[in-house]
Image 1 (cartoon, protein in one colour):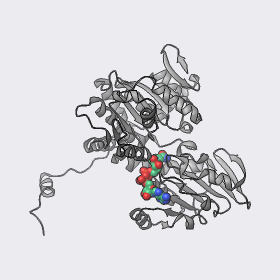
Image 2 (tube, helix red, strand yellow):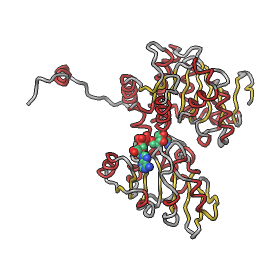
Image 3 (cartoon, rainbow, N blue to C red):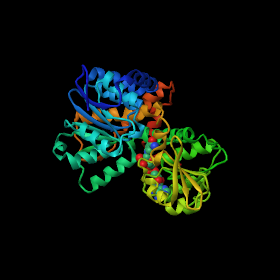
Image 4 (cartoon, rainbow, N blue to C red):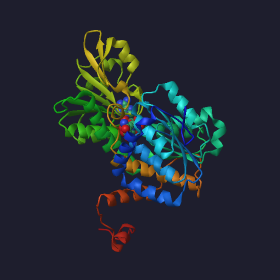
Length: 426
Ligand SMILES: NC(=O)c1ccc[n+]([C@@H]2O[C@H](COP(=O)([O-])OP(=O)(O)OC[C@H]3O[C@@H](n4cnc5c(N)ncnc54)[C@H](O)[C@@H]3O)[C@@H](O)[C@H]2O)c1
């Protein structure tokens, strides 16, 4: 842990000399984040977070940096660690410390042990508010720092997997404070999970492999928000998309969207490229790897790499070698080769740059509004998982439309009356 000269700020980042690059990167993202900028202006004046300690565990990217700036402008004392070390931008981490006074504990590529050391460092001082992505920080404070729970006014959770972990905690009565599931806002999952993950996953795959997608059979596992995005973008580039789903309505939707639907055992021998987006464990297992074509490429864009049975794949392999950045070749016993991208971690963050700032603008506007709501504590929420009020979700959409110069229709008085009545019919 290093003391930053002049700031006396506890932090642990790779190299503070990277600050100028980080500043440029953060400013570039900011250019595409007009809604968050607008909130930052208001936070600067209103100081809704004055004197509050915020602990955050998020991807340490330029978009996150702009959220951290917003919280700082709102008066918060902010500490940040990385939800995934492979997405950490060391230049952004440096700039956050040196330019924005955020205590960052994150280095690109750190291992599990230093991941937990960073979580402990962020919780060195008890937080009033928590921002999480995947629920690791929230579960850690419950198990390792229970004495801090009382002081936590609430938390926010960014992603589907985190929300499902927190719902499981709440169901067992183990969640000690309210959490706003930012993921459940329409202006988050409809855009971030679908368009953001869709585009950036394809981007990550192409950066890692430079394959021509047109004509390839791309198997997408899970047709939720993220899977729909990946499938539509792959199809848009000319791929033949096969969807693997367990939920019948979503499988039907995939079919009517023009994709082929198959169980994994039948999709495995057909696919050239496999992308998992299910939020579930071992959706591609040993027997599936064992029936893949020579040269099949496998990657994951779900939150955790457990979507792929990687120990199973390792058992099948007689040799492993890195063949290009982010591409590892597994040679199976019969000589077939399976290529794993980005160690099975979120491919859009490992090989790509994560979501475009324009979608993170909405996700992080939701985060800032959720944090403000919890800080105000005007109508304290009970422990459990909550949604951001609909009017705030809509406010984000309105601001985004405004920033894009798009006007929308308004209901007339007559229409409002009609929609609220039952007398008028056939
Ligand atoms: N890479 C990113 O940047 C990014 C962005 C958003 C979400 N995520 C993560 O992606 C994952 C999916 O998120 P989502 O919002 O699409 O979730 P979702 O719940 O909308 O969709 C998941 C889908 O997977 C299906 N599924 C579950 N088990 C399956 C199995 N064994 N085989 C086939 N299908 C199965 C479910 O029925 C569901 O339709 C989560 O882990 C989430 O945290 C990642």
